[in-house]
Length: 65
Image 1 (cartoon, one colour):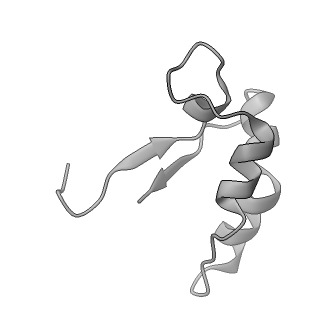
Image 2 (spheres, rainbow, N blue to C red):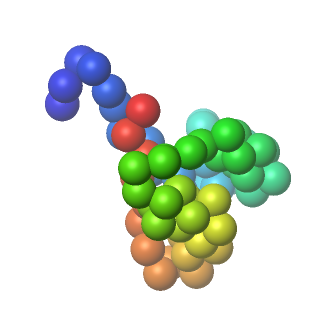
């Protein structure tokens, strides 16, 4: 892993058993500032689908920070 970034699995913020749990509403607030002008599909997915898909076990979303 590079020292320039790290990855976060958003499931860790939704799982009450994880120490990083913040809950769905707080996660929406946290992600609301995200933008990706070079790839609007990525931005749309993260803001509109990632949390629901994670809750339904349809996908696993990692965000590189």
